[in-house]
Image (tube, rainbow, N blue to C red; front, side, top):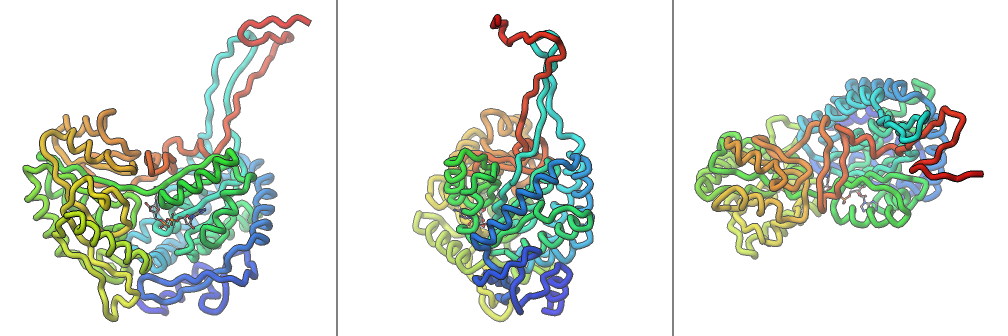
Length: 513
Ligand code: NAD
């Protein structure tokens, strides 16, 4: 991988001022404060973007409000056609955007391309959805009356996203919000601002080809202070925020204080239960990919393996053995399995967690460590580690965003494993490995997993866009992507039409004049 390739990638995504000046996508503000983006792959400065000021934000908000008036009158299937074109453009740019995701965020190229594929898939989903934004009709209690409900767009939707899915989360929200008739203002993570600019450039081209106002898609850049522009703005009826539980608790309060709606997609502490009836080979594949994929920086990463005592040693040996085969290094080199963490702060958190698990009485079975040397000069490459621990350890209760897997032992029936699994603050993804129908069904039943995602014989990591995505408890309760998640982007209206010459009142009330 050479810098020539990076230049080519950046150019093809319209990020041409790189290393020379600033780039904020199509909103070319001359903000003086700059946000620098360094690659965790090689530590190089990739580019800078201008941080959005209050003045810039006011312009963005005006453009968005104005664009909404046009966009809401475009029939939904026509809006769907614009999203179809966006999907086509993403297909064209898949390689470049996937490469940028990998280079700016550090996930493997395969995962970077996979993330862009998710964007394409959600566009396809949204195109179909644009003809299915339907409400119910119901029978009125009054003669000669018709009652039905319909969904209207909300207005301006604010999107706050995390660094680990720097492009897909935007598409999950926008593709749906746009077919629903909303316009969007996006604040990407300050750790991956160029991915934000690249997406904005792609959609701007589609909007301009269709003579549509650019304000349908808006980008603002900066840290939490810029995020606050949208969370505190009562012109924004919905804030969709993806990130840590800490952030979600603050954002939820800000938005609730002005009676706005929030859609929260927050941290996870995902477990796989491995019962005596599990297929060990399948378990190893699911657990290892779940724990080390994206260097453990997925909200659905596997953090805990809850293994029955009868097969504990066997499963442990198989997983430890699989870890020996892991190759850690430049994520753009497809022979590597694991890339770097996002930055040096993340490395510190990883080191602290490994220290803490030992202090709490845990036993390290696969040693961690930070790589050094020419190939790892960003200082962000770490060894995926495994520790034997107890469910009650504080560190096991906590989401450490790094490749650390905790092995926990259970005895007796699967209920005990389900208790351990549910006994954490987070409730995102969960899985059971078993060929026992009773165990699998119990896990999926009301007495089973309390998570938003519960899988049988596949791991916790990743999700298909067709299903609603999100989790309970400290994960925030929001749902995005497939199924009927679109409803959160619309306002519901109940309509009653009287086609008689009388005005009968509901509940038989008489009001003679
Ligand atoms: P983070 O909470 O540090 O930042 C996320 C975003 O929130 C950033 O854009 C940040 O600038 C913004 N932000 C932070 N404080 C804010 C405030 N007070 N007001 C407005 N905006 C604010 O998270 P991160 O480190 O980027 O991402 C990792 C976390 O995200 C993990 O906990 C992970 O589990 C979670 N995550 C969850 C999902 C999901 O769908 N459930 C998906 C991806 C990531």
